[in-house]
Each structure stands twice: as structure tokens, then as C-alpha cells.
Image (cartoon, rainbow, N blue to C red):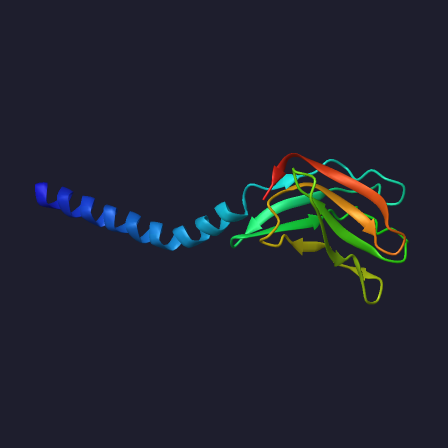
Length: 138
């Protein structure tokens, strides 16, 4: 009876190890995409709907506009990031071909953190709307 109990215990332990090896990569990926942060709603004269979310996927920080965000009808809207020290980083153009827009942007490595996201019209050099995070994200 002792040998059967010991054999059962070893088989059970082996099964747990096998399941852990199968689940670990998926769990690691899920943990990496966890920690999503959402901004306040955009507020401004042209960009005043939706929010922006920060997440980390595969080690890369990404900002994504919500589905209810409305692209401002202006000549040249861009992503603009402001860090906690007030430094400004102009990134990609928001509008792309065929009435589409870049809903997500990767935060470049040289950006220390992001306190605020501004939709910036490069043509008129105007703030179209901005959204802030409760704490700077990176």
C-alpha cells in the first residue's frame, strides 16, 4: 500500500510539473499585458471624445486610443507626448491613408515617461485636445 501511495504522489507531482510547463508561457504573456492604465477623457476644442490606454506587450510600451475616440477634422493631427518634467515629444501623424488613423503608437525608448497625451495639429501648431494619466506611465 505504501508503494502505491508513493507512486500516486510521484505521478501527481509529475502531472503538476507538466501542466506548469504548459501554462507558464501563456501566464507570462498575460502578466506582461496586465498593468493597463487609462487616461482621463480627452478635453479640447477638437479632440474631446475617448481616452488613451497604456499597456506593455512583449516589453514594449504602447498607447492606444479608445474605440470612441473621434479623429479631429484638421489638416495634420499628430500624437504628442508630454513627460512628468514637461518635455514634449512629437510622434507619428494621426491620420493615414483612406480616412484611417493610427490607433496605437509605441512609446520610443528615449521617452522617460508619459504624463499626458496631446492631439497636436502640426499645421496650425495648436493643441486639439489632451488626456492625462493619474500617474506618469512607462
